[in-house]
Image 1 (cartoon, rainbow, N blue to C red):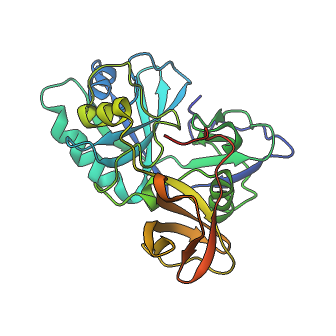
Image 2 (cartoon, helix red, strand yellow; image 1 turned 135 degrees about the vertical axis):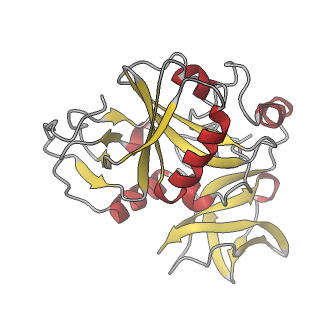
Length: 278
């Protein structure tokens, strides 16, 4: 359920809650809102029920990842939860795609929250990517007891990439960012922007790279630092923190001794990810 500002939350005693200032909202309304988004996004929007939360993405025509999206179904609209620093760009792109569709696209200034490590507070909905991530809420005034940095540490521990931090704009295929494994692509829904490339990669099994968490001692290497398997390039480091980071790695070079800047690193395959990864 998407709440207004004055809707109270009933908190679970053990849940941790953080306000995600890195996320912002867009409201897409009007009689053609669902078919409009359905034809653009990787996720099925036409069957999105009121109170339901789904994960998806908007791709470029060649199939590169532009925006990751959480999609809240409400009675008369769809609310998009997007990276705050990319909201204006998404507003502009959706406006260009709108053409003559009976759709209103506008910023929604309510806050976004995450909850984890406990029962979900009233008004939160389970994160559609991985159960261990917890849930998300929109609006209201829940009692915030953790920071966004705490949330990011939890996300990394679960092994889920943050597309906004880990996938440079229009450089990464969604499958490389595990959007398909995180319930973000509906391959049965029909057309969406970038579908041809995405479906071909999945169908042919031609997936060479994926994002996986890595572990190491000490502070994180710089973004873009090479992961080496012996003298062979095996990937590159993305966002991280002391002791761990996300990395894009070549699936055919995971066996052996991996290093970054001379330090040993270890692939930490998440429990939710099938083995072997394809």
